[in-house]
Length: 288
Length: 158
Image (cartoon, rainbow over all chains, first blue to last red):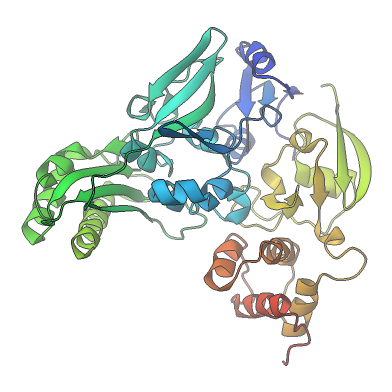
């Protein structure tokens, strides 16, 4: 069945796209893998869709001391990109688990963020990478730190009429002799089809003595937005991820989250799932 | 009455032009406007893979693609997969008995053909096929057919 819209615009330039998006009844569409379902179910409405497919916003490029991923880059392209697999393996892994392959070939990084879901699988890996979201508006560009991008379920720092152009990930070479372990893991009834019940992105820099010199953990689907687990990080920093440290971290992480009961899982299950995911990640870090 | 939009596709190798409502899905354009009913609608939400077609060579769930977004691009449906004959993966599905009720088969055939074109092997083949649900076969014969097609041994023993 047709989705209930009145008009589709396919601009060739960002300026044209922004001009149309100034209309209150216009909404951008890229891969459409979330938006088409929301329009079909009446959860979102738009009279006019602005198709971003001709703006040339796809692709991954090295830019000085950062990697910039165009907003229209598909999950499939991110999962297969050599630079991302090398520098940001949690992001590559997450992109390879967003829906089945036909979804990954269509869904875009910009869309995964703009949708504002607490379950957005790419959000955690971007949080631990300290990424910035490059936003374009008629007045110019601005950079929004990913930690400030998500405001609540379905709500982001994007204002009406703005577009995500790219996501910028700073490259940080760990000091010599350190070991880096980076992972993305998620829990759900079936990985390819479901929205995550809980997800964890972790990055640990391990010193020669086995202690955690730096540890970053981000969690999805357990709070109104994707979140950094700062209490757990504090509990771990400077320690070896042994049984005592893992126990403290699993206790601390409960303060980082505010899960709810919904159709996918009860809050209590999410609390347990996060504890298990964190413990597993830390065991992997310890094993090396 | 909303204005119609013009959508021009290279559809199974042939240039075709359609005038459709702006909210038309690629799935409905293919089935209702182009008369290509091989592509099936299962869930309509991108979860089952039954409506998978190739858009510029990569598999997409056509229930989530706005027809207007495909304008000027190349679309291959199950009808065009083997250009006149069956695609080797389709032949292997027949030989292996990888088809039962058949509803998922067009999507499976399209995704499998794309996986072969990418040169996927082993566990990667399983990962790429995981977005196409089949409630009949249990997948073993589908994956065996994909292996057969990759090795060029479509006359597999029963």
